[in-house]
Amino acid sequence: MTGPARGRVAAIDCGTNSTRLLVANADGTTHLRLMRITRLGAGVDATGDLNAAAIDRTVHVLRDFRRMMDEAGVSKGRLVTTSAVRDARNGDVFRQAALAATGLPAELLSGEEEGQLAYAGATAGLPPIDGDDLVVDIGGGSTELVVQRHGVVQAFSMNIGCVRLSERFLTHDPPEEAEIAALVAFVDGAIDGAVRALPVLSTLRDGRLVGVAGTVTTLAALSLGLPAYDSDQIHHSVLDRAAVDHWCATLAAENATTRAERPGMVAGRADVIVGGAYVLRQVMASFRFDRCIASETDILDGIALRLLQ
Image (cartoon, rainbow, N blue to C red; front, side, top):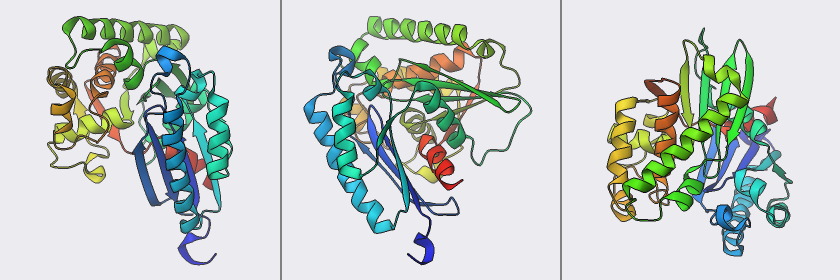
């Protein structure tokens, strides 16, 4: 292969809510970035299993991704699975199907590994700071808190994500006040557990909060008032506490159909955005951050960077 395709790499992330592909050029620039809402983790919190329809949806997308990788001349790739597959009794069924669809072994990341890769991607392109970095990666099934202090990166994965929380707590549309209160209490308990497991979280200083994944970037799109989702405008935009509080209250008061009609709302996210928004709200409150930098670069970019090294 000659020309710009030489040395291209691909990263695939099979998450609880979405399946995503990044094809990066040898110089680290992006050739292709795609996201499909596949809801692989639908029902896993309640049943403990991936359902057949969710596996089929995701594998169909993976076959498309494999074709695109071939067309792009990808020389090396890595496919990872996260919370939903970690939790599911039949996760190996999906992993075998993913291997057959892509030719790539479907790695099962630990929460720690997921956090390390998310940090590498989230902070790419950001200037270093003297204080501590905290990266929050709000996924469908889990949320990773990743701290960098003096070059040492530590991560903890909490079993709270926008799909898991929505399925468990938000059974009415729009949710009732008691459901929101129960969700918030659960999230606060998970954050308390993270602080016990990772004591550095209790002593963050001169910090910077960076948020990744669809909850944060969708809230950024809404806060910016974009007529349509625009990655370039969202990347490294800032969400302040007042904006996050506003969108939690506003979106929780609407039903999913109304949310879906909002400019900037990503298709397939309207029914789970409230759960994710409250995770960001409680993280900002617990660690006293007034601002959150929204990053469009994330775990995919972390994987690509390692493949290129």
